[in-house]
Image (tube, rainbow, N blue to C red; front, side, top):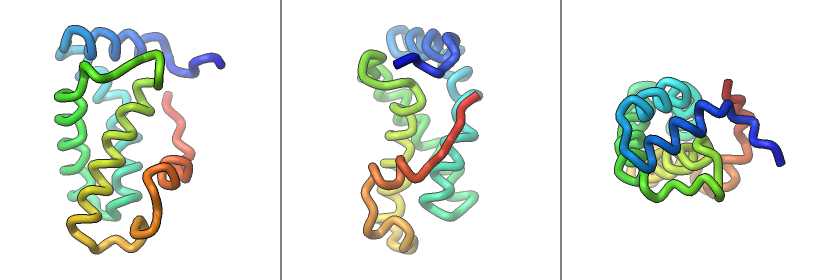
Length: 117
């Protein structure tokens, strides 16, 4: 299966995950934050809340950077999983969003038809 991501995304992720390169992290943020915000907003249903969860997700991405394995998943899939889990944690704690009450992370991921440019 051919990887649809531009090589620069893989290079940024490689440099970020192995070296903690702040410039690479910034490039990944610029590239993926809009799509991840859309995923989070769909789960939480709240603009400001979604933005806060996005920031928390990127902090978690930074902390977990050494766990990324390019052989297992693309940078977006890995970051999307972290963002979705953060959003679902918020919903479980808040208890106000009925959309995700009886749905798994897997169901929510497959609901999204997201294209990354």
